[in-house]
Amino acid sequence: MSRPLVQLVDIPQRGDARGGLAVAELGGALPFAVRRVYWIYSTYPGVSRGFHAHKKLHQLCVCVAGSVRLSLFDGRREESVILDSSAKGLLIGPGLWREMHDFSSDCVLMVFADAEYDESDYIRDRDQFIRHAIG
Ligand code: TYD
Image 1 (cartoon, rainbow, N blue to C red):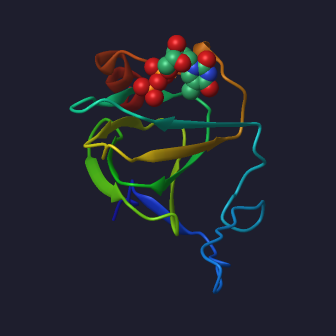
Image 2: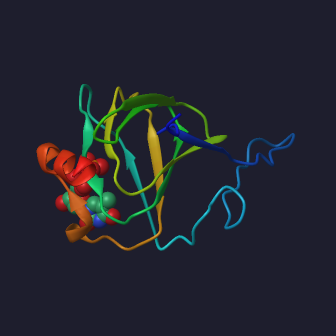
Image 3: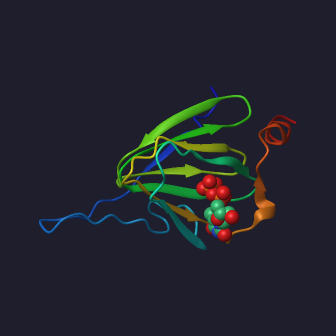
């Protein structure tokens, strides 16, 4: 059995009568030390994003508002997951082609990464990715 491409982690919820509070910390929901955080929001209708893989980067994606569909492809298999809860994070390691589709208008997708932005870590050509992935 090959391992699932979609790896979801539970994000501890510490909300109370005042409302929600979710925590992602090293050793908890976060398996790596964070060196960069970015968020995708106000995505225009019908727009899809991503369409790249990383050579080394590890990321944790959390949809803190709205919903989005993430598709992951390892060069052979493709799996898709809808993120619509701040209680779940999607771990995406190196060597996975990712696409983001079906953003709701209110979607805010937070991404925690273990390295600073580095364009040389990207593979943005799908055919090149497949060659890289399956050799
Ligand atoms: P891009 O990788 O195209 O976004 P996505 O894969 O989510 O569709 O990034 C859009 C632009 O933002 C591109 O010019 C690179 C830049 N960028 C940074 O400067 N730093 C970052 O951390 C990220 C994620 C992107």
